[in-house]
Length: 461
Image 1: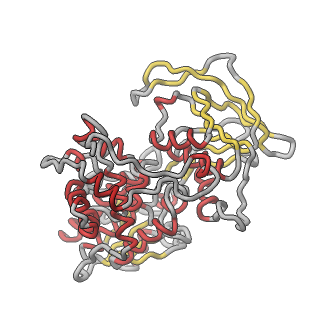
Image 2: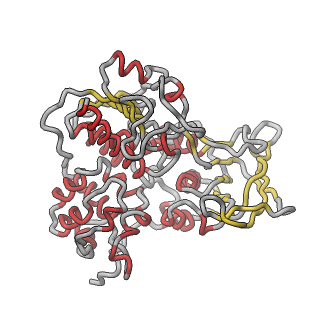
Image 3: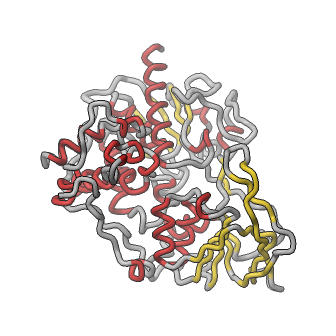
């Protein structure tokens, strides 16, 4: 066996998967997983763990895989992560654990994400659950939002014996895992629902259709319902737009709305009458992972899809794997270009988009080279749907209805990175509600930190 080269992962052929919503990657089987685990050096000073926001004992679980102790591997992961089947699929491992893998200096890094996915899938298929607390400790904690931050915080607290209730605004638990990530990257029934059930198996209760700030406020939860601490993991669901002419036209979506309609209202299933514009030619504006998700979803609904992004390919913020898959499937990338106007017909529907070409200038404050318009380079492109994928910010409903909760100028809740503590005693926050839109694993890391902070607060109290 060539220890410098990772075991390849089987995938659907691009021309086949571009026409269905089944999972792109098949994952490892037992033999492939054991062989890939055999490439791990089992480093004493494991750099991979330093790259993991939830500090999974990576050499520990991989050593169990090597020994074919898959249940043991799952229990090792479960000590740190509530959502291994999710993380194994959507984490940017290349810039985190795998990016620090020593094996990667002279060859391919160990496929840590694919091994984590294998272990989690094996556990689900064999009915293995995480271990719950021996007894309750008498303290009640409320968690707002059932996305990755909320599920992680709730799971960690439940393992410590807390009586935890999650309040979810939508009718289905999972947050962005359920409504934001397409089925072909993250299967909802097979993976997300199973991960939610694992958290519930720890004793966590989930109440759906509860809009905090409207149905009940955080102050009321603490004053009237006996919750001694609250974690806010409500995400960032308020989409941003460019402010260009024509954005109010029919056929203009935020990526959030487009993906939510597709995921929760099952536009991807034949027989569902889902109110979503299945355009023949779709323009997605943006270059992040959500833009790739929206573009690949529109493609599967039968459209010709263009991604318009104002910087070049090297500056695309999306994972390289997602860009690679999008290109394989036939997405057209119009880079160094930026919309200036959405063209609207006499009935108020999108008929095209006006675009100006760009060039890269000097680096901006973040170190990325700033795009500059090229005068006189504007042109028009016909299309019937435009999807804006320009990032999101937190919905201000919770912060505006909670006394003494500070927010910053971006309407994000102010919380410490170490514990998630906010300006209001007993209230903690983390994930996109604090940072703005970020990754699933960073939200999980924040949920984990807040669980530790809440435990320390209530123990001292």
